[in-house]
Length: 222
Ligand code: T5A
Image 1 (tube, rainbow, N blue to C red):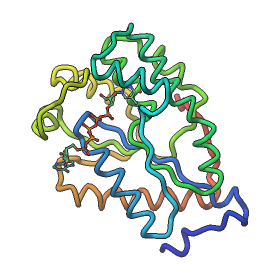
Image 2: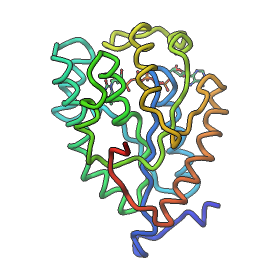
Image 3: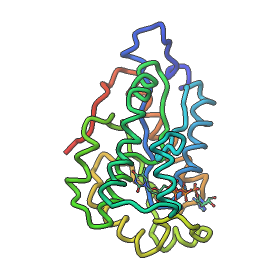
Image 4: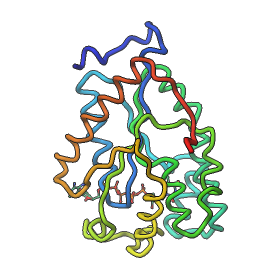
């Protein structure tokens, strides 16, 4: 299978672009663990892949987000929402270049987190989606499904702003409102290796589809 998925950058670029794969879920659902495992797996298959995460705390905007998340600063809910979005916009062209030159991006959180967490605070969901319009659309969204109660059992929440059970329940509701049939929902309460196996299958299918020339599209689907 791996040799079919390899493609040359010198060849027809349109036929060998990378895939944009996003993992979403509540805090502690296992996204970071699975993103790392996926990148290793894909590399082992001869597929060039990189691990990305949002927020990207390395940029100036990202440092503002990090300060907010660790309660070192306070910001209006609308303002922080737009900053999360700006943090994705500042990476958009680099992401597009990577995809077009054959790199698959495994992304730990994306626009859906942006909308789900802000809507959980009571912001209008359409307003939350608006600044995401024009960002690259994922080729696959995998949702790691876990109840807020089970997620909270995985080690205590730390000091970050949103790591509270009652708030995570509202985030789960927001994700339910955002979810559509294209999402791959994986039971995140399975053993870590079983979650990994389920993701591998769907991710490889997605990469194959992108290598065959599936066009890059933009948000928002609906
Ligand atoms: N946010 C983010 C917004 O409000 N707007 C936005 O636009 C964006 C992008 C960022 C915060 O910012 C918010 C959302 C977040 O609150 P973060 O840095 O992404 O936060 O942090 P978390 O999502 O909280 O990351 P965590 O590391 O806590 O959770 P993960 O990545 O989902 O989980 P992971 O892999 O670290 O695993 C957590 C624990 O569970 C175990 C792991 O070993 C680990 O101990 N585990 C399992 N245990 C049993 N079975 C399994 N299947 C397991 N999988 C993992």
